[in-house]
Image 1 (cartoon, rainbow, N blue to C red):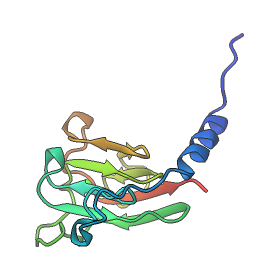
Image 2: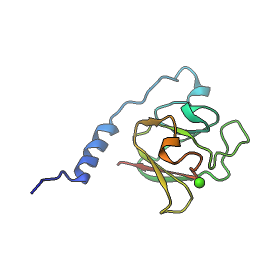
Image 3: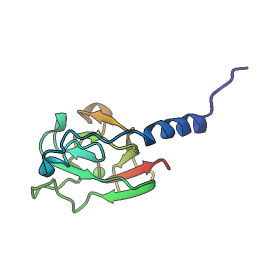
Length: 138
Ligand SMILES: [Ca+2]
């Protein structure tokens, strides 16, 4: 019989390691650009390779936070951010789900903590995201 490591134990250890990670200060000299690529934000982008419009959100201290994209626009544009995201940067310590609709049980894209993805096209999720859900460790 094989022994398996429990998922709960692994998740707990990962959360412990990430919780003490220092914030990046790459954009500290440029307050207006601080949203872009700041380590404490989760951002989606209109185009691949983090191009076009951007929409960034801040995570909760812990637990869940949901942000609906219908009615939201790419920063400094009038273009809708709903069903239009093609890449993402997750600079947070949280896992982030992107949902196709604002209802649970629909197709999801999962962005792990501290990860980037330059295109959703190979994930079957291009131009689909309608809801952002943060899942942050305590
Ligand atoms: Ca959608």
